[in-house]
Length: 196
Image (tube, rainbow, N blue to C red):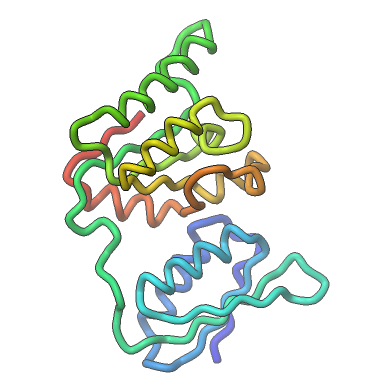
């Protein structure tokens, strides 16, 4: 069994290392990825499931490290998450535009997100990263609008490394954590991308 220690490595590096190892592996091979935060564990488990592999996580005694055992499957179980997708929105700030008054930027961002719910064809993916992570977490004034957006079928996802950086991982209120590799892959395959 191959063991790859990715503790201390920011997302998406553990996912990238795991994907490379899985590509070189044969069916039923086992690969263990060691990480030191729960966001990385979640991202590894999602990646494995999306590629048709099994993942089993076990906390390592003495914490905070987590061992993620990947068992190679025979074939992918689903197509790329972005396949056939239309609009993807990427939000990198908790304010819209720049100016001397931050409260205006926050009000504009709330209005923008609310407007997304009113589009004839709402976005299929909405990604949040950098200070945009504050919009999907506890205390955000946008949570109700984001829930309405999720109810249209939009996938709401926030960069896990950003959640960790701002110490918001346990305050995520809507959607799920993701990583930059997943964000970049989805944006690359989207028919249209709006960057805010």
